[in-house]
Image (cartoon, rainbow, N blue to C red; front, side, top):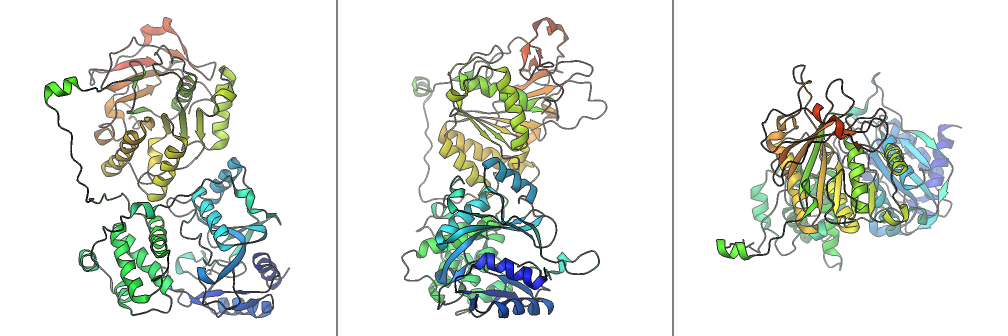
Length: 605
């Protein structure tokens, strides 16, 4: 098949056989890597002008211009390539830029689809380097723009794709063209071709995607309309470059929507709060008359801010002051002693209720195994390795950020095989999230994903494997404090208890024969402050068991040391006759508790 026939076949799948208006877009200055300036074509007829469209795409691309198309079709007399003029679409699409920090690679996204029982895309288009792909699902018929947008957005969040490419009028590179961006050149200096990496000829009903988790509006709930700062104050507070200052001052640009989006991206990048961003977009909208007079004006502005916030999130959230002053509660000592402050254990002497705890070790010692066994005890209401269960059955969630669905399946099947869990009874109590990748609590989309789990599932106990996957950045002091702040806010709001799995520092040659201390906890100077207990696993050299050390405990007496044998099975059993072999720590923590946990070949996570 020739390139012309291949492109014609692709666009026919996108736009169908019904006569409609369609749009192409050009970037006339591809030498500018960060250019967001598109020049849209006049509306073209499809399929009546198919020959002209194909010719235009190839001729413009051959002249060094980057060519794009909009998968949607438009009304007979559109006012431009915009949402208002979009008529319908028979395509779902996501933009995967796996080479960028925080976005899924195609293989990771495929595993997410498989785990959720969702169909593979009809087309996978490689737009430049290997990890950059556009995915298209051809639908069985045309659907309204809002229906398609909603599912596009759900797919973008679920697959951790580009969160700014779900809108119905977004444009993408067609196959059989070339990517002229300077940083995308091949090793030989040529421009990479946009190719079809996969095609399966399938079309789907929109209902096939009904199992995708819903996406809540982020910014609409965050912005406090009525607490917007004056525009003069915003302009004075932040540094503006000449390009964006000229856009802001423009009386009425030709492409108002694109100009607003560019301004919102700039605002997010220089660190503006959502309220300050609203002040900027509100000011230009009053002058440009884009949304003025519309009943959904605030939502339209909020959508623009949301698009910028998820594409260019700040590293950490800056908490803005509110008009309502929080008044601390102060007690006299006698009144305090008379107040009802109830302390509860979950597992007596080990884990207190409504607290944040951590279990750490070097890789391959058995953290995931022991915590899944703990989860089984919690959901069934049983005691755990001699520790009394004080609360009975409780809803427990295991958020797996390191193991994806296939590996977690192996672990869960092994756990079920050795326990007497009634799966029908515990199905709603034992919740598993086979994420298999980071869920950053320092970015808006990660926080939204986390909040969705907490608000919709309402777990009582949450195990997170692992703490290092709660941020895309290294766990420095600023990042760790942001994570702990979010967990404490969630703890106070939902009365939930957390157990974080974490990694110890890599031991030097002298330290490999020594039991771990709090100093071995990665990020100990700032990562342990808010934890009720810090526990560690350690395999003594040459031993067939693993020791468990409570390196920090705020509450509870030291129980009798234990050695647990897990060599011949997935779950751990008490081996009391080996107690004399327990290694005593160096006393850096007065409340050190020592237990033993076995290690098992093939079950070392």
